[in-house]
Image 1 (spheres, rainbow, N blue to C red):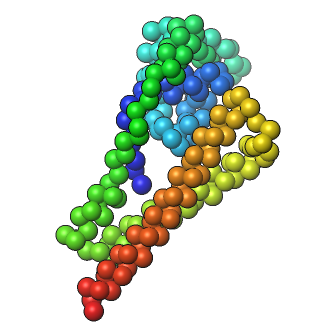
Image 2 (image 1 turned 45 degrees about the vertical axis):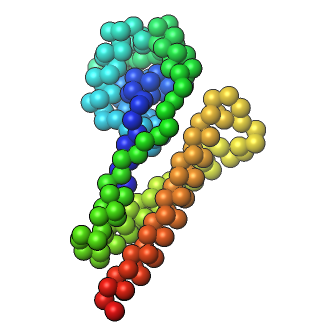
Image 3 (image 1 turned 180 degrees about the vertical axis):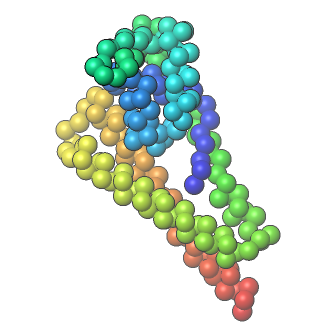
Length: 191
């Protein structure tokens, strides 16, 4: 499923990530690949371009760390202006999520195409989301073994993790409903 959420800037996702832990552009990109990117995706190129702009705007600071046998590493952290912007953004009311989903549009137009092809597409989506759900559950078990004891940043991260799990469970249930309904529709057309 390719869902796109509108309204949040990459700058804010980066500020949240750097507020959790300073890091190089490479480290930040890997964190997007492994966690933040599950709910706010960005390419490595977008992250590097945005870091450069944010550094120029004074939202982040950059410390050059010498490395032996490798190029120096730039480690970014949230600067004073970035903390002000993060607090401003966090206080701003957020808009309800708006999803753009290609599969939903295809299901809506299913009567104009080959249902067997659409069924296969839905099965593929279900498989991908089942794999993602398994990954989320593994991350939850590893990172948050005792959720009842969490507070602060760890609690906030856990709540987002739980949101991902609940969304994936809901999508899988919806895909199962679609598969049953479309399968019955195909049978009705061939009867």
